[in-house]
Image (cartoon, rainbow, N blue to C red; front, side):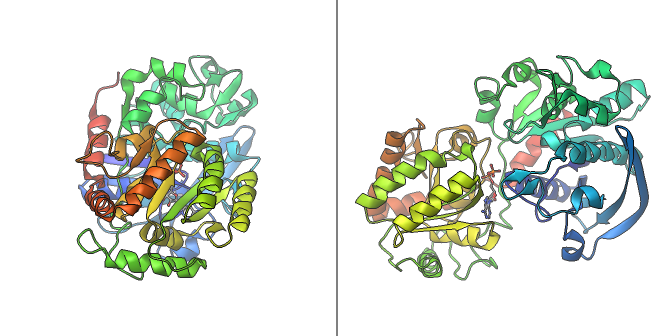
Length: 481
Ligand code: ADP
C-alpha cells in the first residue's frame, strides 16, 4: 500500500511530544512491512545541518494563501527500506526557534503556517510520481487537508484521490481560529457551516478534519470511548456522529530506540533477568542529579510536558506531604506552563536534598530517568495514549498512573489482576487517591520480592508496533462508515 503521512512533528527530526514518536515509529514499521511509506513535515530550523544527506528536489511550490501567493520548495531524505521524508521548506514559516512557539507562548500565525502546510501536503499527494492510496493526517495541523482532498475530488475531478485517515492524538488541541481564517484555504464559503468547517462561529481545523476524513482513528481504545462521551473538549457531539468510523488503536513503542541494552544514552545495561545494571543506573542518576546515592531510597520520577492535562497540580500537594513524611526522592524533567515550572522549582528548593527539578527538554536524561527511577508518575487528567508509562515498563520503573485513556489500556494493577499486575492505578483525580497510590508504591518498594515481580513483568510486556501497524492497515482498508 502507498501511504503518505502528514505530521507537524516526526521523530527524529522534530518533537514536542508523543505525536513525533508515533509518526516516526509507525512510518518505519509500515515501511518495514513492505509498504511504500512517505512522511511530509516542515523543514524546521537546523534540520538541514543535522541531516546533511537530505537533498533539495527540483520542485517549486507556489500556492495561494488567502490574498497572497506563498512560495516554497521541497527537500527529501531517503533511506533504503525506510520511509521517505519530504520536508516543506518555507523559511518565513518554519525557520524559527521552536516548533509551535517559544517559552510558553505560541506563534501568532500558526493558522497560516499550518494551513499552508496542509495545502502543500495535498499538492504533494496529487502530483508526486507515485501518488498515495492513503493520506494519513495527524492532528489539527494537518486535518484541513481532509477538506482540501474532498473538494478536489468532488469538485475538481481528482478521480484518483487517496482515502483520508485522520488520527486524533489529543482532541484538546483543535486549531480553533476566527471565521476569517477560513479564507486562507481559498475554498468556497459553502463549506463553512455547522456540518462542515464551522464550529461555534469560528473555523476549527480539527473539526474540519473530523467531518471530511474518510476514517478516523485515535491512539487508544479507551480514549476512543472517552472522546465520544465526556472528554471530547466540545467535539463529543461531532465525534458521536462519526463514531462508527472511529477506531482506537494503542500506540506502540519503538524498542530500537527505547532499549535497556546497547543504548547510547545509558552507561549501564540491564534486562529482565539481570537487574544489576538498573541499580547502577539508579546510583549514576542520583549522582548526576546531586541526590544522595542511596540504593534503598525509592526514587520517583516524571518526564512530561508541564501542562494542565498531566495532573501535576494535584501531584504537588501530594508530594509536599509524602516527601515530608517519608524517605523518598523525586526527579522531574519537563517544561511548559510557567506557573507549574515555578511551583516545581519551589518544591525543589523546599526539599533540596530530596527533589531535583530540571526544566528543559533532554532526550538523554529522559532515558536515564526511566532507567534509574523506581517509580514513574503519570497522574494525568486525561491521556490519549501516553508513551512514557510504556517506556517505564520496559525500563523497570513501575508506573503509577491514573485510570484514564491509554494509561488504563496499558498498565495492569495488582487489585484488578494480581497475576498480570505491572503497576499501580488509581481512579479519582484527587489528593487522597494519589496519596494512596504513592503509599501503595512505598509498600511495594518495601517488599523486594513483589517489586521484582512487577518489574520483570513490566519489562517483558510487549507493546511493539507490529500489531498496531497491522491494525492501521486494516483500518485503512475498512470501507467508510
Ligand atoms: P504527550 O504526547 O502528551 O506529551 P506522551 O507520554 O505520549 O505525552 O509522550 C511524551 C514524549 O515526550 C515521550 O517520548 C517523553 O519522553 C517525551 N518528553 C516529554 N517531555 C520531555 C522532556 N522535558 N525531555 C525529554 N523528553 C520529553
